[in-house]
Length: 340
Image 1 (cartoon, rainbow, N blue to C red):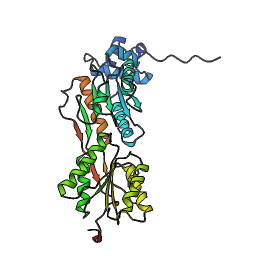
Image 2: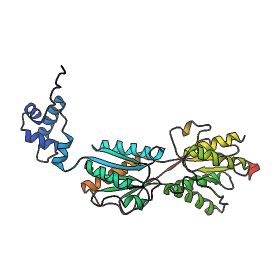
Image 3: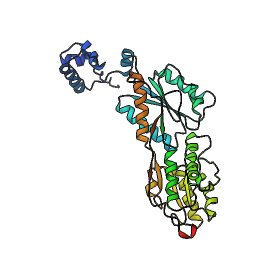
Image 4: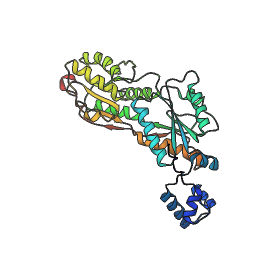
């Protein structure tokens, strides 16, 4: 015969141990202001002793909030989106919120609208949208007007958080020019990603401002294979001495293409990536790259959403821009005299 599991302690059990009414216990867990700190401490101590946990569904009914944030994202297998989601979950948890993630493969067939409907069924308090390759206008078109929303990406009609995808690539390109390279080649990301286009714009503007030639570049995807295949063309061109790759995976493929060609990094070709993946410091050679602050991106998304929920200030007019930082390692070096 299977034993019946013991019943979980309830409000009345906590009230009995704390010597207060069950209404007082309820007020404590609703953060009611009309409870003294002494009584609050006594109730919380009794709850801890009994291992009492308020029922989330009951708390949602009582407060009108589920304390759950919905996250809509695409391409979550990629390092950037995955890192941002992890940061959102950490920061939401620190603020006593749960997260529910809808990972979508494409925006077609009502995918965003379907995810929003599921979030509505769950009673989420607000939504964070990470559009990836989906245009912001298309993604926002499916979001409800009556739910607080934050977009991670370019400026939009809702509160927005954005990483620096322009200034840091411009700085990285200038750095290579200052090392004596006459120009810098580029391996872009996908043409339908706004982040990739901004990184390309930063690279191009740095070259134009310096009066350097702007080489042609062909968009690819974010993979190391894409970096390798396009990198073979660059590695075979002995006039190529410096390359800015749109992410570290592309740079990884490029490093292998250069090695296969018999050239050396950074003696023959300097390479810069973007993201600063955990493995970047342990590649051969360690990769100079642009570091995105994924922790700050996740924190600002959660803070902006909670501020809308609590009414703690008006939404900012301009996107919250999180700086990126050039991390110099051994994959970059001065242009050799014979190349100038």
